[in-house]
Image 1 (spheres, rainbow, N blue to C red):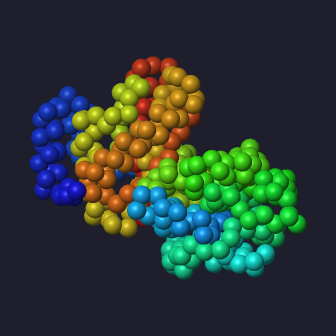
Image 2: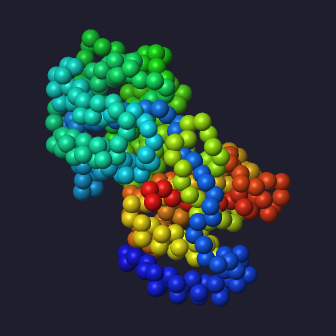
Image 3: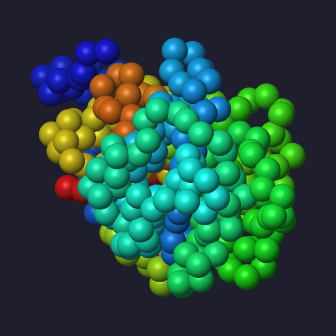
Length: 356
């Protein structure tokens, strides 16, 4: 896909301005940043990666092994995280025997994108050994005991494991940990079959905040892993650490997730900004008005954010790894939902730029 270049954008901007003379965007002098400040809010204080490199990860999905996909997902996740001061670490629970299978590749420390990138490169790249899931979960106890606040554990597993009869089942161990510490288990199910679903579901349900995410959904969609860690708000919050700049909102028709032509100018300007600032990242935050159920609006706001990402990637050539999605449904209106004018302003995707 060829990238959008500035000369093309200027011509397209003039063309669209003439086509949509009645729109607000066309009447205004093109201006990328509207000066509104937003904050990234931490939803967790710590996160832990439990990396599975056991022999079952040599199974293929398409033309890649599960292990290759796991490493790619971790790189995508790392690339889209803002610089918040989480405590974070990377550990494996295979290969090896007993507690020796649990290895620290990056011990818990303040999150650093560069350190994570380097560590991911050193993780086992060839599947081998048994899946000692019970030992891996038990080995989390002393780590969690030293942490403050809330922790998210991202566990890669297909739910099948080599049984250690001296230890409880994985779900029981996870439940014991959840009763002692503030911990959520996000279980990335690496097998779309149902063989290990009992163990996968048991670990994820150890606390109310846990979740099972299918492996096949993650590649190219790191937001499924970033959403438990942070959100974006317009006003200051106690846990906010990073301030970004919000660009012009992209608005949508009622109950629609299709980018409208009158938004092309703003999106193309955003494309130029990202092209000219290769270290910048963008978080696309989807929103809806108040009509409809909370569950429906959450999904709708997600689709709206995803449609803007598709435009930036396919039309602008922006690397998918520089884009993070977040969605809030009707929870964060920018205007009153009592009028149609206000509701129209709330049906939006905000683009928050950081790293400039």
